[in-house]
Each structure stands twice: as C-alpha cells, then as structure tokens.
Length: 130
Image 1 (cartoon, helix red, strand yellow):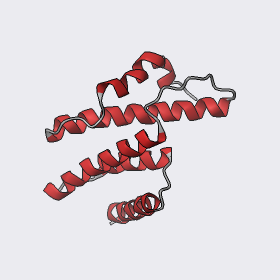
Image 2 (cartoon, rainbow, N blue to C red):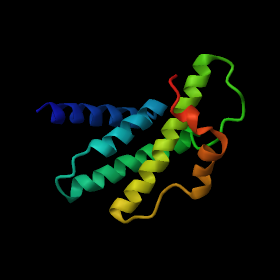
Image 3 (cartoon, helix red, strand yellow):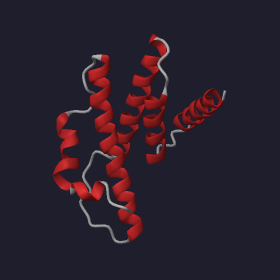
Image 4 (tube, rainbow, N blue to C red):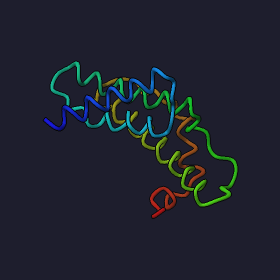
C-alpha cells in the first residue's frame, strides 16, 4: 500500500525534525498536509488529524509566520519566500477554523493573530503566479 508507506515515511521524517528542533516553513506545510490527508478510519486517527494541525500552528507561531512583514522584499527570491510564509500562515488559519468547526473544539489561533493576512496583503498576491 503506497499510501501507508508514504504516510509512515512522512510521520518519521516530521518526528525526526521535531525532535531535532528543526523548524521550517516546509515542516509546517508537511504537518498541514498530514492533518488533511490523515484518513480518519477511527476516533484515534481523527485525533491525530487535530494533533498535526496544532503542531503546524505551533511551529508557525514559533517561526513568526503570524507577524506581518514590515519591510519590502529586496529581491524576487525574498518576495517568493515572504509570500510562501504568508500563504502558509493563511493555510494555518483556515485549517484551525475548519478543524475547530469539524471537531467541535475552540480555535487555537486568536482572531488578532489572523487579521494581518487580510489587512496587509492584497488578495491577488496570495494567488499570483510567482
């Protein structure tokens, strides 16, 4: 089963990075994907989905993804990185609201932490063709 093999690899890789305190935007994205693609066959796996979402959000906060960039990008690469961070935080906010509604839990992200996305970034830049 390819799904089980890939999921097992992703879980091991994410756990290794977490244990080594390697926190990156990519690791946040891995946990987001794991929370979305964790097939809930029973209650335990549904709980795992929420755990992965919370890990993604916690690492994103520690990386400061919730903080609005205050400076203009100096290069195209820096612009792409800033948009990647903003898009990843947008996914965290959306995932938090979805899982809270789906599982009947309160949201983890405070509303004031999600405001900067919509206040400081033009919507077209979130879906631009960078």
